[in-house]
Structures are given as structure tokens and as C-alpha cells.
Amino acid sequence: MKNKDVIIIGGGVIGCAIAYYLSKQHVKVLVLEKEEIGAGGSSRNGGGVRQSARDPRELPLAMHAIRNIWPGLSDELGVDVEYCQKGNLRLAKTEEHIKILERAINQGCSAGLDLKLIDQKEVRDICPYVSEDVIAASFCPTDGHGNPMLTTLAYYKRARELGAEFITGESVISVLLQKGNVSGIQTDLNTYSSDQVVLAAGFDSRTIANTVGIDIPMQKILVEALVTDQQPRMFPQMIGTAAADFYGHQTKHGSFVFGGMTGLEPFASEETEPVTRSITASSICRAILGYFPAISQANIVRTWSGFLDVAADKVPVLGRVEEVPGLTLACAFSGHGYGISPTIGEAIAALVVDEKSGVSLDAFHYDRFKPKA
Amino acid sequence: MTQRMKRTRSQHDFVPLADDSLIICRCEEITQGEIRKAVYDGMSTMNEVKRYLRAGMGLCQGQTCSHLVQNIIAGELGVPPGEVETHLSRSPVRPIQMIELAQDGGEK
Image 1: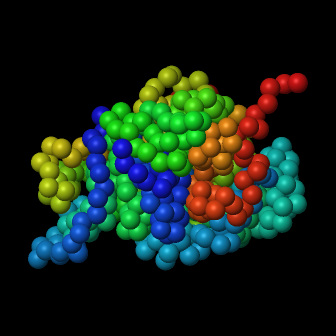
Image 2: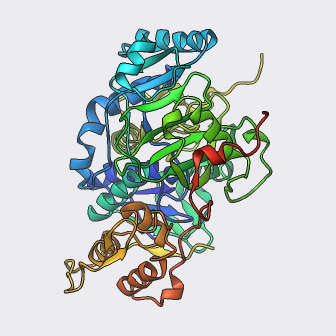
């Protein structure tokens, strides 16, 4: 039995960020990760740091991170996390697409976001490489992108320097209770005691929460991405489409990172490890070249896949579990956790230390999922 | 199966070596010293070093340097090289132009 102030389950960007913000306040932290640091969604990620087209419930979390944390994060952590704030273009080819954009623009603007519809000429002024089929776009100048792998490892490195303990290759099996309160965790090898446990284990959070009677309705959905070779510097914006057929950006390195959906993901065969399917890279390439014919000669050097932890209503599950005192949830990010990870780290750390999260997490309560009346 | 590792920090300062400027990953021009420093900073697996430094992320996808990187990580961690798992291999084996790849499959 080893005593820690807080045990964090999961060494992804969320777990590492929480570990960092807790360590900064001299809290003794133990992070347990079943694989390696950032092995899940944190290294299988498009890198968007985006407010546009975000669920209105999530917008305040994204806006807080972009205003207050992302701009100084590389300096704060001592690692260049490649944060680039040059805007997000969401491209439209049809009138239907414009209607989709208008809905997101209305939602964003009513939350105080600088987000507007721009015409073909304005799109081409910002990004001259888009195809002539693009007739409009939404543009959010304060959006951008970062490098999720570096962000995760930077949070890990800095938390470790501040004294956080990390153990990888050890799987958490259950949360332990004493008289109804959290008393620690059981792994495949050891027992660790602590009255505070934060569950940030992606999709695996569900089975671990199940051990104390809490169920989080989420699905494990395959997502695939690809990387090109180094290209001349072309455009710094984060790109998405109203049709949601691909997204991506050019990295600091010069390669492009693109993700996309074939439409068949929910029906991918059951795999325990994420695998790339032969149909997907081709499908994403077709989608991209329909918007950016100028990069048709770029080489695909690498493809990868990962699993999303998609909540029934597609926003995360965050905060205290009142039924299990001592248990805090930070999971079900549904494919858009990276951009808000600094806010989550800060808010969950504050919640654990002084019961107040700063930004409100009320909309993300685990008990919000209700059956039909 | 991932090996269990306790990521304890070294009590000593990082010690540079005379040959640290040696280039190990030729595609991305990553030196021995950068890899050693990354391990010192906590990157303890080939995937972590790859994601932190880009060693093995270039055109050859680590086909040239992966054993060298593996040896350096093992040396810094004080374990036999065989105990350091190789990084994940990613398709495609050779780079493919997007225009070519785009022709495979689809409705048209």
C-alpha cells in the first residue's frame, strides 16, 4: 500500500495535464498508465485547437484555453508544443454546406466567438490553395492547431520534473472503496491507496467506473489519419469541411496531417488494437484532393488509427461523482479533447484541491444521461 | 504486452558525451545527444522518443535508425536492447503519392 494525495488513471494528454497542474500546487500525484505515455487518442490526433463548430457546452472550455493557456504553454512547459494560432477555415462547396456553417456560426456568435461566413474570394485571400469548387467558408481567426504528441509529452515531462510519479505498463482493474468512499485502486500487480482518484482513461474509463457502479454511456469509434512528407510552407490555418469529410493542417515540420471518416467507422470490425483499414487512406486522399488539388503530388508516408471515446451526447464527462466520494471523472472527450486539455487539466486539478473548478463543469455531469420519459 | 516501468527521475544532472553530435536519424537529423537528453527527460520507449523528437518519423520511417535509437535508449535506461520494444510500424511501407492512393476504391 502506497499513499498518494491523488491517483490519476490514464497517461494521455488529459491525465498528464491534470498531473502537471496538481504538481504545480505541490500535490503528490501518481499517474498509472497501462501502455505508454500518450499511447491512445493523444498520439492519434489531428491537433485542432478549435472553437468553431464546437458544442455550445464545450465552447467556454475552449475559449478559456485559447485566451489564457495555449499562447504561453510552450514557455510554461519548456517544450515547443507547436501551437499556431492562424485561424480555422471550414470549407463549403454547396448551398447545403453553407447552411451547416450558418448554424455553427450562429451558435458560436451567440457565445461571443469571433466567427463569420466568408465568400470564395475571401477564402482564397486567406488560403490561395483551395479549389475553385469551394464557394464559402466559416473563418475563426483565433482558432489554430498544436502538436498533440508534444503537448502530452511536455505535460508529462514537466509534471515529472515537479515530482509527479508515473508508472506505465500497469493496468488499473478497479477502484477500491471503504465505507462508500474511494480508498485506492487495484491494478494487475499492486494496490495503491488514496482517497482521491481521477479517471482519465479514455474508453477504458467505462469498465473502471463500472467497478464502483457508475456507467458512462460511450462508444469506442475507430478514427484514422495520415501524414504526408515535408512540403513547402503552404498555409498555416486549421482546415475542416462542412461535409466533415476530412480535417487537417500543415505542421511546423512541413508535413500535412489529415484525418477523415469513410462513413463506415461505427461498423469497423471489432479490434482491441486500432488498425488502419485499406479503404481509409484512399478515401481521405480523395476528400482532400477535392479541396486542395495543389498537394496531389505529396507523398503519404504514414497512416495511423485510434479510438475515440464518444459519449452518447458527444461532449465529455467531467467532475465529481457524488455517489462515490473521492472519484472524479475526465473522460468521454468524443474526439475533441486535445484543444481543451489545458482547461481540463487546470479545472480538474482545482476541483480536486479546493472543490472549485474555475470554469463551470456543470454541463458535463455524469448523471446527465436520462432515458426517454 | 507493455513492460512495467517506473518513470523515476535521475538524481544526477544530464551528462553530455563527446560524440553526442553524431546524427542517428538521418531523415530528420536527430543526434545521439538529443535522444539521450529525451530519455533523461522521461521518454522511455521508442514510440515516446519518436513522438518527442521525430526520430524514425521521416521518409524511411525508422528503417535506417530504429536499431540505433533502440540501443541508445537501452544504454540510457541500463537495460538490454531487446527489452526496449521497437516502435510501431505504419503503413505504407513506401511513400505513395496522394493522387495515386486516391484512385484505390470508392464509388467512381
